Amino acid sequence: MIKQAIIPLAGLGTRLLPLTSVFAKELLPINGKPGIEYILDECIEAGIKEIIFIISKKKQMIKSYFYNDIFYKKIIKKKKDPRIIKEYKKILKYKKMIRFVYQNKPLGTGDAVLKTKKYITDKYFLMLLPDDLIIKKNCSKSMINIHKKLKSSVIASMKVNRKSVNRWGIYKLGKKIDKNNFLIKDVVEKPSIKKAPSNQAVIGRYILPKIIFSKLLKQKPGKGGEIHITDAIQLLINQNKKFVAHNFSGKYLDCGSMQGYINSTLEISKI
Ligand code: UTP
Image (cartoon, rainbow, N blue to C red):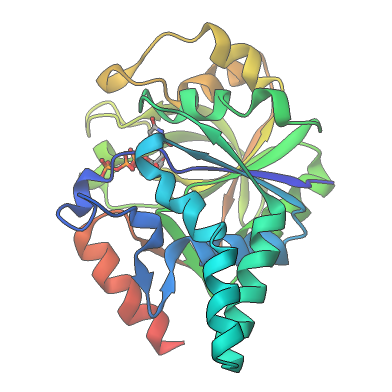
């Protein structure tokens, strides 16, 4: 069973400037609720019991958001507002599940993952990138079911516009397992249109094997001088480790870009 999830939150969020100059993008409201809460709710509904947040000193406000008990208690004493009491209980529930680790230099997603090494207890764990919201169907839950069946690593995927392949991790399709699931032959981080093996992109939900840490420990920086999780995945694929691409059926919302962030509120308000 997959019981642990990790969430990298130590990036700079430059695409959302000026909103992120003093504020953590994951706390920005999407239809009245911080983006990170959608991700937490997805984890809880998928049966996750422990969540590791990778933050940086600059993003300490994310921890403060979950550790503001005294403030809530004072307010609730004075005002018996049932809405505030409900919100407080929800935050307490999240707090109990979250552990915080630090990545103070944004050296890449692979480096962020490495910071969780000593806390991962099982053979596989889930990773969610908080910029990627998937609504209408719980993607993590579907991926955990596939993992149970195939006993392999699983990555969420979708087709993207060919012109935009240089923004994504792109993979080469291998054998078809069924209608929505394929083996991954190769994966490459942000390729040029010429070098892209397809227009199938990796989206921010991964079920990763614990052995990935052994690759990350030795990994040199790749594209843009960062340590990418996709490069570590490729090293495991080279050793015939099975990675399944799951074409999820929910709706993808990119909350990491300004246009995408604005659009996500509009889309969620329609549900
Ligand atoms: P991105 O590189 O897509 O986003 O990282 P960013 O760095 O936060 O924002 P931009 O590109 O400057 O606008 C994907 C995810 O990985 C985390 C980010 O917080 C984001 O959730 N990340 C990235 C880390 O935790 N550490 C890193 O070193 C890099």
